Length: 441
Ligand SMILES: [Zn+2]
View 1 (tube, rainbow, N blue to C red):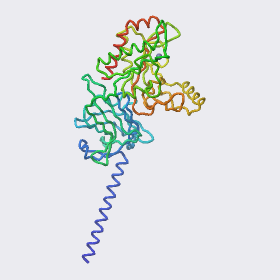
View 2: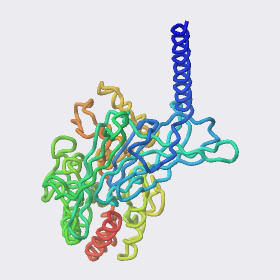
View 3: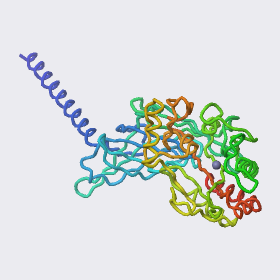
């Protein structure tokens, strides 16, 4: 009889253990479904269990990394208090406050809606940084609960390599950006590995594009043409920027006509040269000799810090005025020229006539080719080769873009302004070089 009792005892014990396991598992699943696993010892990163959120989009534009993350929705949308992106490293934690909104996939978290804001990569010192999403949620009894998520890459973009802009000591750092396995092999997250590195031969800080060239002389007036003057200005600007320690390349150094989209083409060269920043130099023209002033064309969905500062510095150091042109004007002298509805209709008609599928463009797509095509997906690049007359931009669908501005420095059709630009050319160049250095460093 004793034997039977022992067997029954063991069976009951096993049943209880099984029930407990099922209970623990379901609680755990429930927790996961609600939001995340609450981390008590937040600094014991390697030993913690994290819930996973998805990186659904990430871009590197100029010097800025932006990450869009989707995490399962919390108990209700009102309970979400705050969200922060953490870069955990040996030296400590860097925090970026996140904006968030509900989406069909869950809650969408992002650093900035502007392509040239986010994680400023040039600020990162050597080390390994692991990216974690921290969410604070209000709980009953006025408590705040913290949830931590590691990040899995759901994009088609596997990894990125970045070199910081040459600093005042002539040094650079290399940054590898990608999703890596963590110590706990169940987890992976986005990792930034930063190390001192010599700038490779084919990596530049800045590209300057002297507009036009060769048979394409651009605008002309009073014995001058745009192609010559933009080259003269660009060569002097390169000297100034090199004096400030930047590694600079021109799209052309002589009076030649460049290809547009093919290898060594004007719109792809900045990407071929792995540059962070590009200035395309132009002079404007008008049917009226009275029209004068600068127009700085900036990327779409971007902070206008550089453009605003450039306009102010030009006005400080030269007699430059701001243009009366209203098309695309955001602030005096500062312009964002995107496709208009009429431009989109025209583009679609051209596609139909030439027999290719219309491009996917909208009113956030940059109108000027050099700003758009150098910026990849950040600026709506689209020249993928479907139009046989154009060729293809090999970088059109990249999530890495060169921050590009088109500078119309004045009107060649105004005798007084062209005279002023020639007399004050050194000051114009100093204004551009100073604003560039302030922005990049
Ligand atoms: Zn031009």
